Length: 146
Image (cartoon, rainbow, N blue to C red; front, top):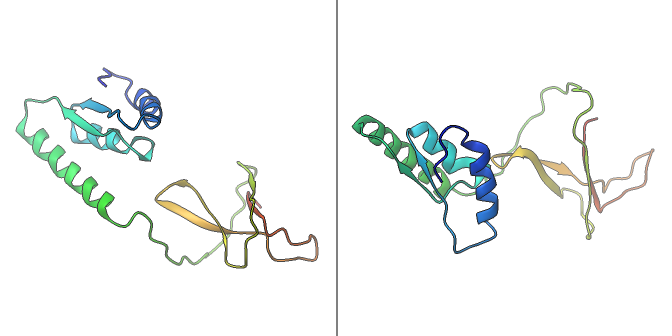
């Protein structure tokens, strides 16, 4: 893929198409370490590789370092869960709302990992606890604004 100025959206579209064809590999032509990082991380999947177009040794060196860092990060465990402490809750108004009904029942402590990025997810607990207002719905996760 060699896009002259509008790179991200075409790359994302092509990455999405290539995922359905396991024998295809998409390479992106880049001119800097920053562009390489962008292409290798697009859609959180990235292109299979990059082709660096430069005549500057410093750009080559910086791109190589960046690719090594990305490879090391990908070699790390894909998902590490950790505890977080909620220090405050602020209403953000209406936003995107998602209610997921599953085909199995969840127990206390189970739910879905939700978030905008694969590297920052939160466990949203299922509605398995009964309240004074509604019966338990252990098949449902409501990831919505309060």
